[in-house]
Image (tube, rainbow, N blue to C red; front, side, top):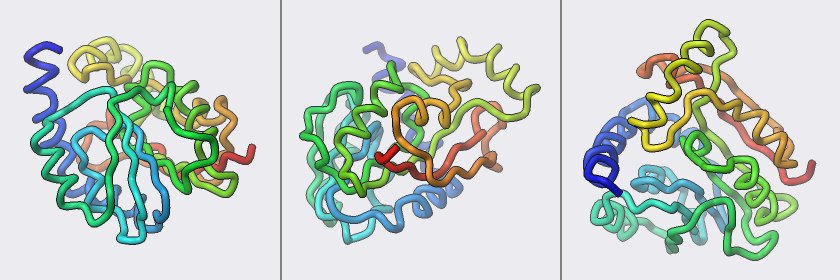
Length: 206
């Protein structure tokens, strides 16, 4: 990894995504999570403080190691065990039907093979489990979507693999997961090309 992707981008990302609106959305998403949980795309661990004490264990999967000292401090402050795995979501090393919940926040934009990753999510979820997602992606407004398409190569470069133009709902459907609830909105503090949000949960029972 280069200087930018190792030192500059992780610090900027952590600062940006520590903002009040990001934190409010994380808290809303995670308030009911409990039991055995998997988070894909752990990043710098900003979700940790928003998990309820009912979480029995959190496994996290991320191929990158951003700000390792900061992440270690956040993990040590957690009220539940956290096991970290430096792996991609496309090939999870977990048994079938292990987890009660799988969580993905601002992650599917940068996964290399998102449909395969979501198939893995479906595999490791218990039949009665939940996949929670909070993701940015392609806008329903065609004018904004056109700009997302134009600017995607630049975003992919400066965002270390982040894509602006993915249809998150279609990716979930293609994996065999069944969307139970989907809310679409745009974040007030983020430009619309990067703040068009997909929020909801899906079931492994298609």
